[in-house]
Image (cartoon, rainbow over all chains, first blue to last red; front, side, top):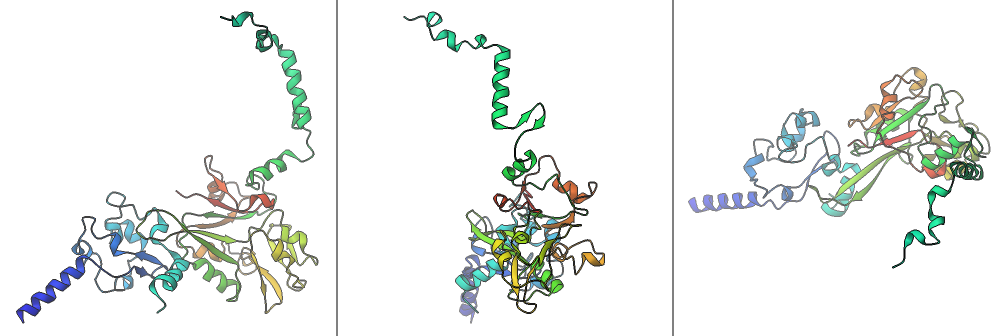
Length: 116
Length: 254
């Protein structure tokens, strides 16, 4: 039992530190914004840098929040915590680095994520 | 060693030999041949303003013949292709699913970012040209430029569906509406909104990123006019070589 628990813990940690999943696409409040773990992990960042303080681990949970908007980012919430112009590029510049748009989302679904 | 001062070529190269009078005469001849200015008057076949505008493209800037002179300013770097403008337009103007009055062009660009696919977006719509090619080719005068506000409008009852205007438009801003059996296009929401006293188009109102601005350029005191008339502002228009003098201006935001 103890072994199983240890094993589970190990799997959880290993899986978390090198996230193997594909890109995450937010479709609220505007469609569509891309986030990729692989570009964020490793740059002095571990899972606990963002989870669960900034973002809940459950997919889609943060999109349901009322203040998940650009105004909140500008005040240093969510993405804006790091993307403030000092740690990383500010959220009020380089819009199209994350905003891939409706057409970008369609392209992603068709060619990279596979049609659901 | 040869002495340059005594050389026979020295005289011809001496600029002091050409008198001021001679030089002036030469310059005046040059101006007469090219036909630019003689004594302050225009001697060219094409008015200088028109010639300049055709060369520079952003021709309409500075000359606003209509009252009110409606125009749109688009900050092209701010567009995020959320397509709310398209949704708002479809709802306001009853645009069918196969048709379009405005669109967002997009293309992949190279660069380093947090995603491997960076895209560049360009919202496009009818440019309400001052010299509209679509109006010129219409055989029945179904499409016309409004004499008062300069909007290129459609008279659906006159349209015979020959689609010549669709071919002539340099901006691909027209489509054939199957229900009305006529070509349909953007009219800056004139029929649905401006006519009823509203001052903004549906697309500009719906834009969450402040990329689209609609306004009247004949009011020189307005904020909208000042957006376009900053001294250092670079103004871009689409397809200036078509000579259509478009009224949709693209500005760099960053």
